[in-house]
Length: 197
Image (cartoon, rainbow, N blue to C red; front, side, top):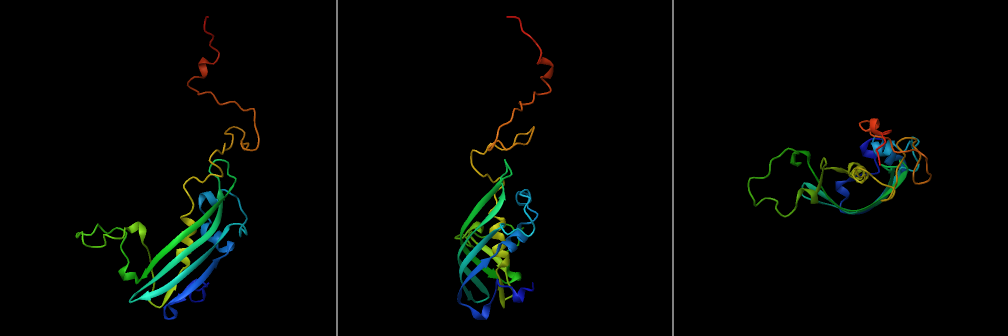
């Protein structure tokens, strides 16, 4: 879909404005496709249960920059890293974003500023910056980032998830198996050893 007709594009000439944006599960599914903890679910494509979100934003401009402030709430379905069952990740973020012309974007490999007087009040982690062309703001990359960054390295369905049996693959949360822990091959020769009493 062209960016001009995207429901997540706002024209700078319309600012300031308060808008609510909804992100449907079909789009969330596209954005997180290919991520390991998402693909491990084996969900259909498109997945009507992928997740969804709602952004409630105030957008305004000042000079060559535009700003978005508000909230982003939603959820995303991924696989548990232990049992591969579904995990619902809730998203509840406060957004404060700056949109600036591409030429003003900070370079990723820039060294620290030489002067201590520059930008000491706001750390890089506190400020989200996205490029824009000065005429329209495309919020789609911001919304996509909210879903992708919400996935932890090893999501769990529960802190005490028992995972899958490494021998037979049964989900230890819902069933039991008679598999024995494998013997360390280095100690296998000692298995039949009988010690005198």
